[in-house]
Length: 314
Image 1 (cartoon, rainbow, N blue to C red):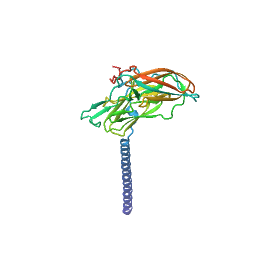
Image 2 (tube, one colour):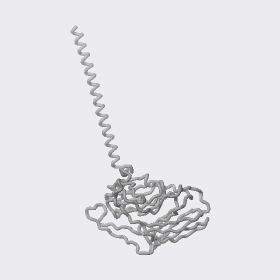
Image 3 (tube, rainbow, N blue to C red):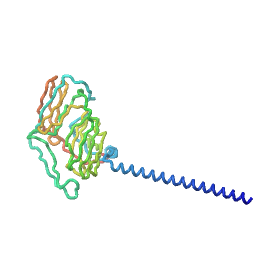
Image 4 (cartoon, rainbow, N blue to C red):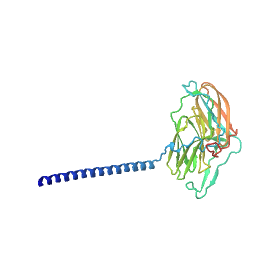
């Protein structure tokens, strides 16, 4: 009897030891899994922090009107109907020049305070690219064309903060498209994208180091005029004209431009430079016959405004 009891007690002790060992093993595995999960989360956070791309969703205004400015007259307007791509037969090439008579704003040098880091002691602003009175950097387009050659395949466009200036200063793009805003500066930047015609703030791109890029896949969605500024460097400014057709061009430094494959017809041609105003003219294109046009800038444009209003429009 004593022997049997001893065996029973010994068996109970062995079972208890086995259970205790099993529990300890499970607890060790649980701690190991928890440590592994934490390590994975930390590694993912490090990868995210090291990425030079930022999601545009995080840069969108919290409210549709938050940070907006009063609307101003835009140089482009909503089209009368959808653009229809087609095969162009008997298309013509329009070439021309863009001039400006009158005093041309000179470049200026801005001396910066020592606490504004990353831009150097001074910045030279670029105002007008020109050769004599011939103006480069002006956009020319057909305002009322609703059918013609197919849209280009290229739908990704770029603008960059370089030497505390936005470049290119003026560009024309096709909708829909993606706009990549980047920074090549060690300076802090905070770029605002404003729809000139509505005054709405459509995006914000913050930067704290060079090499960063913020993509926007919704701001180039339709015909509009966009103004890009920097909250920290008020002299830094750029403009984008968004079209739903491919019949536009940007003049070269000698003031010349060319637009190809225009179907026969009568068109309204418009040119615009942000500092020198607009020029407009009506032109008839004959099938297969080259055409030429001399445009002279000078019609007034609305003065830029960056005064914010709140969501109530005040």
